[in-house]
Length: 81
Image (tube, rainbow, N blue to C red; front, side, top):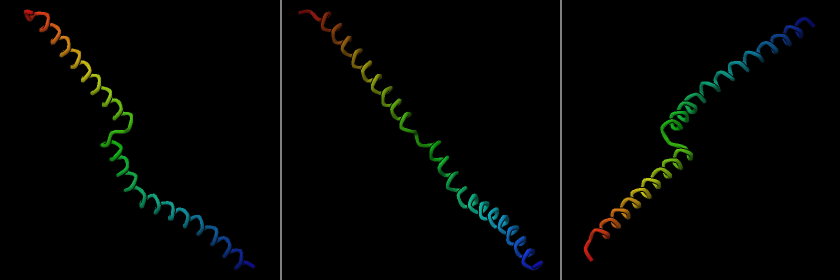
């Protein structure tokens, strides 16, 4: 009876140790993946950033086209007919 109680206590205490070791091993194994993923997220722009840059580029192109059209109108008005 005492042996059974000691065996049960030993199994319960080892269960906690095993789960702690397995949890720590899982953290060690997944750490490089998490680090690389964080690095990629830092370097590669997200969808929101790409959309913002695309919108900024489009606004600059529109402004350039407006300035060129205005300049062409001015030149046409100055040219003798």
